[in-house]
Length: 459
Image (cartoon, rainbow, N blue to C red; front, side, top):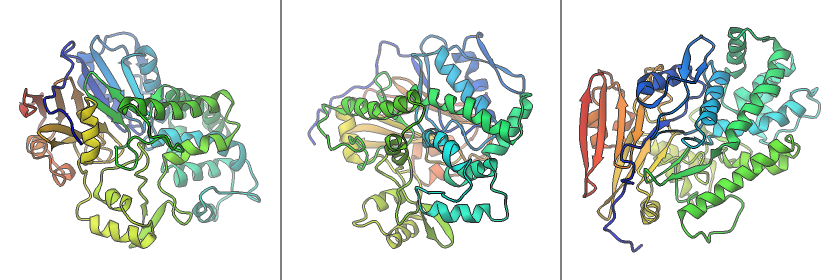
């Protein structure tokens, strides 16, 4: 592809306009509080505040030139799903133009809940139908020896089809802490009347992918791949005038479905299924997974911006001539030794650079103890792949801080070896387990596009 090489990035009108990234909270109040405590004095006003179940009050109003982008997967695997989602929704409400929300798969899959609560949960099991055929066997195994009460069946939905095994238990604990009723029927009523509308509010205000011209970046839950870039699901149209027209089209597609579902009280599953399926793993032979040495491995869905991953395994599977279980097993075993994050595809980077975009920022793909980025040289112009998800961080109460300005990508984490890892930008480094004192790294982009590291240790 031909393109101009004399390109400068960065909006110089607001050089201190900081965008803070919050990835994959999954209901963790510890991670959210870690973020707030670290950045609070720099980006928040004192009032108004939001009170959590433990009585702690935290600020909501952002200062001028400060912005936050939430990369999705706000809930599921920690105790305070209700409160964390409530805070994020309130944060958006107070800062309508300066808080950006992204749809994650753990947010979008809740579009199934109203249908499950209306049909599967109260049924007598005599006419159960499962959209994914393997769920039938999963349910029969799950329910064995149990009384198929509504709460048990709802537990199956969360645990076996949404990857949230402790959702019901954690919600009951949270309701108890809030002084609210938490028996089985109360919990189901709370999900129906409170939780589902909260997910709807989040999704109505969020994007599949967001282009921020101030930081020259695109932001999404999953990563861009050759299979999902410039493609709108269930559409043959590829006549986009640029990246922005594609982003507008795919966001409109998702938003129209969500609004239709909410306004019509989730009365047509067929209408919402395309969006639900877009954020799910690939289905092969009625299953989401392939057995590899006794372990179920999710089948990559590189056609989705929500769950696309730049992992070697995903890349190999995406390029299989034919999708077969044996092919996926072979790809997994070949990729096992190098399962880290790969740079964004060069052809995709070329197009993004043509549209004045020089970084791709995403969550969804756990990268180890620290957020990190890879700098790829595209004809003398740097492109940055910024991987933010630290779901499996060793220090569960800490979250890496990612600050992005028009001229800087700054990663802050409490690991003394961060400097080496960020500078090397190697795949294996991104998976490293490191411990040490606080270190913050700032990369200031020079005129020539060469990153100049600025290091602070401590505090």
